[in-house]
Amino acid sequence: MGIHGRWAKAPIAREQRTLLAPTLDDVVAHNDEVRVLDEILRSLDWSKWEQHYSATRGRPPIHPRVMAGIVLYGLMRRVRSSRVLEYMCLRNIDFLWLAEGHQPDHSTLCHFRNAHEVELRGLFRKVCTIAMTLGLIRLGEVGFDGTRVKASNSRYGTRGREWIEKKLAELDGLYTELLAEARAADQQDLFEPSTGGLVSGPLADAQHRRDKLQAALGELELIEASRAANGLDPKTAQLPMTDTDSRVMPNKEGGFAPNFTPTCVTDESGFVIDADVCNTVNESSETLPSIDRVIDTFGEAPDSLAVDGGMSGGAVLAGIEDRGIAAHAPVVSNKPGADHPANRDDMRTAVSEDMWAELPLAPNQKLDRTCFQYDAEADQYFCPMGQTLHRTGTETRGGTKWTRYRSDSCAGCPLASKCLTVKVKDGVSEASALAAHRGRTLRRSEHEAVHERVAARVATAQSQPHRGERF
Figure 1: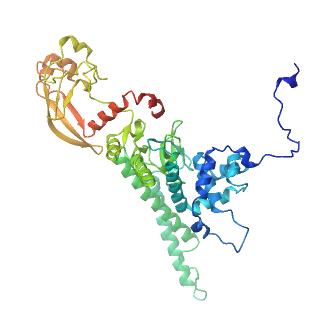
Figure 2: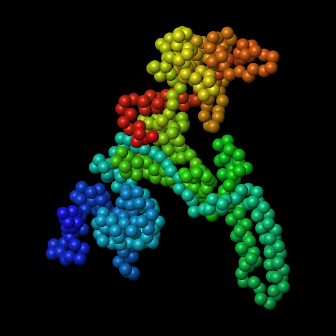
Figure 3: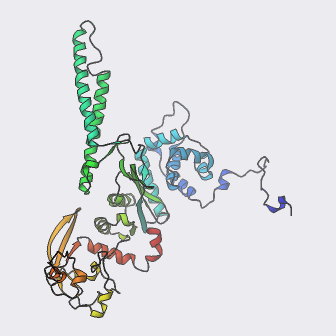
């Protein structure tokens, strides 16, 4: 068999003229999602959009339905850049079909998106609502996540408080000097009074730089306050000087640099139904606002929300439940499971001695937290020996309320050495140190019950097939 018979022959030679050429409509499948979007857009009233256009000067504009369709379809296809949209309108069949052969450049697309930001947001809501009515978007299960993108700022283009204050002091001195020179020149210029005022030339430049540094110092103070609230040293705060909206945070590939954290919510079909960009390292604080926007857009809450471990804080999970949404997150419950050796019907009874060796240990090689059962009705814990840990007080850490529980029955307990952490000093035996110990202490978060419910939900058989997709 010759080489020409081995491979499939091209159906149409590139240079061949055809009598019945296929139309652009022929090459787009009848069930393609771009057709659905086009039908939805054609059903809407565009009269308010059309009022923004002038028909008396310049070339005839591309209808806003076409331009809005390109932008929205780009969002559906995860295309954000106006330059990439320009390329798609020149090369991709579905974009060519939707644009009806129009080929707007990236500047036109960018200007349209900026000029109609409010209208596009409302249009996005309408299109999503209609798509949900048609069953294309399903709010049964949605997922929230974020990533990291670099800001338009060099990793070395950041400054701290000491540098900014030093430059401000230098500029204050320069400004005072230039102001004195300007006043002296104005007094000597008796025949040709200045028309530009005192603040001009080098003086205006110095004032402008001083104003920028003063604004930068204000931004830095906000960063310092945020770091202090998160238990970090505010003195090490750095402000990006080129893109001051960005923040120094870890890169995806390692190291630190000015970055942003974009977030999005997608439904089961992969539609992006909400997106935003924040300048925080942990996007967990954006979870609830993002879900609220979804509820506002669609008029209803999703049945469930899948998030990763970074968004599984107790306050976030509690907020999700408060909105009537079932949360799915990779959380660990401190409640002993069904096969746990400390799980028993009567918490006041001791775990049998033959099961002591099977009681799990924490990383510090002491009895794990799961060895203690909580009685919600009595608001107290029971240790593996059936002794009570009573409530002794509360404290607030990181914005979360914690309740302390302590046992006063640890003296002489056969499991004391496996349960209590003691420091043995010279001349004191371990037995004496254990006997003098105040007792095992546990802390319970105000959101502990939420974690237990979410952990139980994720562990169910119905949740198992999707855990890999979610987490």
